[in-house]
Length: 373
Image (cartoon, rainbow, N blue to C red):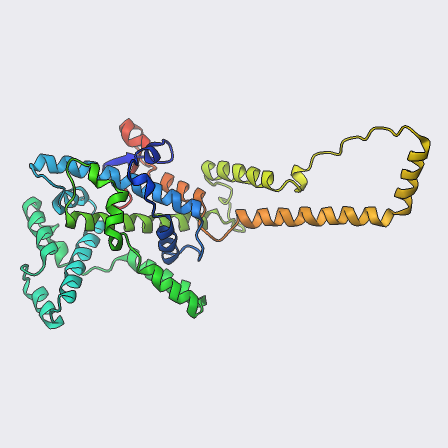
């Protein structure tokens, strides 16, 4: 999709843009989703909050553009046609959305108790009476398709490389899991925004919209929200892989300035949190001279007589400093996706490369491209 949305990291529009939805948070659910998509077993809360901020900002901008399209059509609600129109230029993601809509129809008919053989016959015969969502998509794409490439997606059985890569990553992730971890992983994979429809609607603050989305549009928005989370995790894992120093790689030093700036500030905060670290230990203050020679003599004799005790205390402090420095290093180099990985992933995704990139509009240069469409 060529339209862009305002970046949630450059401005405060994302946090201030929430009114009613600000009290509703999906941070806990996002942590589980990120774990099922390839993050560590305990994703960082601050990373989940940042992902939530990005997803919320993009969906709000997507809703605004869908409302504009709906007004141009003269409709009173935001429907699936408006979202399909916005996503029409990205063929791979449109094909993925069409498959999702087909499986939603399939699931609804399974719940209603229709026989599986009848479902296969309906698919082979092209019957659209039972396929509510698929019929909506096919009728709309038929009305705007002049070349036939959009309608050809209904018959296309091409393997989705992105989905295949995610499944292979999940398979590698589960190889080292025990039964308890695998059960938790399976529960995390079943989470989605569509399973909490009322909370998702409150999160988007749909009650304050003049043109509200209908049920099918909310299903598509929930799907696009999950796809945005999945793509953020995919890109963040690639960023984290690029940040690992490789021996013999002449370009290993050429990392993003944003990543360097974030880590320098993170190390500084880590040192402030551990005052015993060697870099953060102030020099000793000079003591005032004693008034009596007897006191100085006692001090001298005590220090000479208990030299081993002084050395032990120095070794103890040194061990504490090493432990604090090690703890700081473990925190900075955790296996979990860091917020800097998400920021760098969004920066790379919106980066324009090419001879015409300087001539793009200011709105496009300062904005952030949609991740899900």
